[in-house]
Length: 219
Ligand SMILES: [Zn+2]
Image (tube, rainbow, N blue to C red):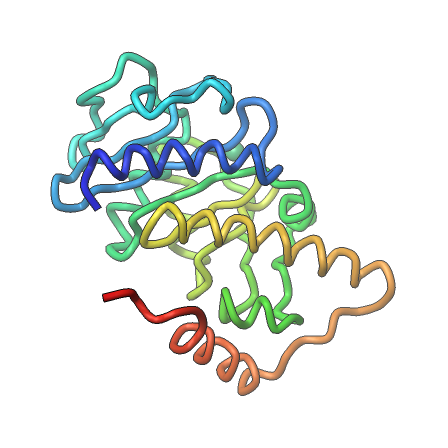
């Protein structure tokens, strides 16, 4: 994907956060990284999602963390996005939200337990929850690195959700699915105790989903 195309994708993904109900007002943000040029694009701080245009995204140099293009100030969450790109080589897009059901788990410091085949498919593990950390320096980035498992999402204790993927589309899917399964598990908890899937069953679902699900790439 070229940088220009990524700019369109990152803009669309930010707007999709509002359309899918994962964010309200100015909360949350999405970014994308163009690894060949080392440039990342992130939502500007305090701009309405409805008003956001591709040219409003702030272009940042991954190495220096400095703005290289854009008139607006970048999201205050920029340092956490940079930290993830610098430390997880396969990540090409990052999303942060305070989506309600997932953040409810974060409020009580609980992971989202692996009790659904949909969680096994997409995440292959429970969605972990970090202890509370403040937003100074690399504290959030370090907590994510320390507590993450193979799931492309994590809950930040007392705070919200970080989700990621190779592309903005994948990161969006991880963010939407995190909220979707959080809602289902929360509903389940109103009527009983969620039952965990055995590890060997998880492996079956995860492997199938990550090898044969969907359509093969078009030639
Ligand atoms: Zn936040």
